[in-house]
Image 1 (cartoon, one colour):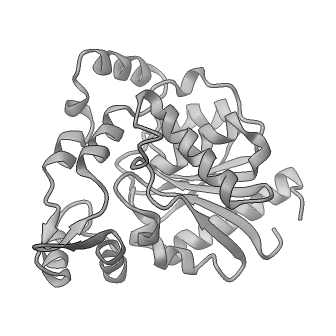
Image 2: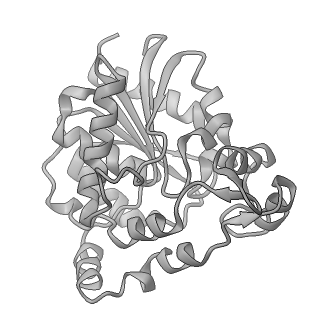
Length: 269
């Protein structure tokens, strides 16, 4: 793809887009970047089932920031939202890439629907953990020491963990506090889309990059989604949080996927 096209990025649950600074540096030489700053916190778009309003929030934000079709790019939650937006508003996208999205297909979709109706989503998602997580520290150094041993963060590049806390927190009376509301984060987990098998096929060329050590991706569901939506499939080193664990190789994987989309679909230069 040609230089200086526009990428619109949507973040993972709990991770405001500025936290991805190291990953973005691998793309900014060739692409203009716009982002959904911190989805789920606009009262005009309250978190609801299957993330319908979150998708509306992304579309609203994208319409205000872009004056031409963009390359959609989303990590985890952001990947699913980008897919949903491409189905609703294909005119806004030239192509899109999903990074290790939480895919619920096949029998898992039926079981998740039952869990939602039965109030059991805390048993099968990290929602309860999100609500209980520590949100405040006296300073950045203490926060880094506290988080770097946690499973979610232990493989982050040190600079990426520092960016998460630098851009994902705000000053508080006791030091620094997470900007992303734990209550919102939990609500997002509890309402994860289980309707992916019933969605129409997107008309936008798309690709999916999964983390080779991801604990989120179930390969059978991955195969189901890529077939159902006609996505090109790629992988990248790391787990579910690979944009923070390997930001440079993730950026290279995105560029490779964009080149493959260009070759496969002859996208406009």
